[in-house]
Image 1 (spheres, rainbow, N blue to C red):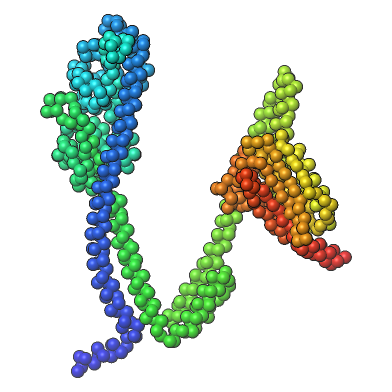
Image 2: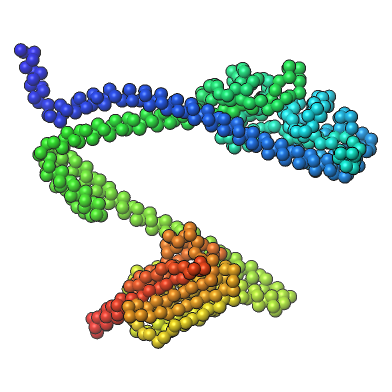
Length: 607
């Protein structure tokens, strides 16, 4: 009894949620190692299958590249074989052939060039790098002549070449006189190995017997491959695990053809492709982390459910929920009371720290967005201003030439004027962009006059040169509006339309229609250009979005939309059946009347 009583008192001191939490914890700790072992086994098996498939794909990639190289090599050899000067050279003596063939060696641009007489005897050869052994080259080319229908790989002096031989025939190839043979080839070197490695996304090595002729492996790993390779270097192997350095690889090898015997029993060149298990190992580690994270999440969720059964937590939790909702609505000033048990008070304090941190983060995000906007604006402005200033500077230098004809001077003056106009438009757009959001200065004015002034300004702009602008539907409608801002919006849309029309296939045409009904005024501006690209239709009204323009910061549509919204209206893009663009500014008459009423009240208060 004395031994049992303390245990009972200890269990009584434990809370119910603690009593339930201990078995949950033990269950999670027991299931975690078993889950990790099962998942690791499944992932390793899947990785093995995936790497084997990738390995075969890598081999097929090399075979495709090799086939393309062979086709190019055959065409290059055929072109040289059809060269009349080369055929004429082959009728001379050996010394003359050796001297005259230097030109064709430089022309070919290949790694290897050789000329053989009609009996297949080597006359002269050239190669990059250290000179090759002449008898060995002659022996290798004789083996190529036994299979003249396709390029062959031959090993020469621990180097590997792919050679294509074409006959040199005087006259018709079928019945002409045999003059000799021309052999062209490229070396399978480190450059080729890198190209194959990049295309196959794997490490590659070219071997002849126990010799590595080209590889993307580190020198130390090459030695390990020779020592551990065994049958991998001498016979085809589909897949084999091999460790090089501290990494595990899955390797495969394929033969590349017959090789020239060099006292090694006729070794065949092999391509060895190696795929690293590193990504697979990282995947296993990532799976382990996810499993552990899932266990922790389940454990925390179970603990939360156990805690929630306590009725004393109901009201504090509801307060926390209300605080969360306030935070979701963007109310960062909502504060929680620290009532309830210690756990709830700690949770309330943590929520308060989170609220303060979110408030600070929100402020930082707004500051970052402003800085990003300023950065994009500065980058675009500096680019365009440099463009205009460079044009003005260059044309000013040309104008300083006294001997320049008057016609060229006029063209240069026109280019300077274009640059000045572009800088003026840029600065006007930026100035107006900084003023958007401020109070309008409405006045009772004629919409016809606003449109006419905007059309006149656009017609004098260089971008409207050779563009026909047709205006229809104008009437003397007087409304309350900020004439300067609204005119700028119409000007921006007209200028964009002119620039788009000049990119079209037909004679550039821009049309402006003023349509009035009982509810609103609509200004419709259309062009016969190629239309707005699909890629920017969702973002074209955002600042600094531009497409198909040589200059401009991308503020024209942004300003037009903001000005329309400040007048209580909208701007939208429509499309004609021919695919041309139509921008429509809609100004509700009720909103324009409201501007007038607000202006009257402001004048009364000021009086």
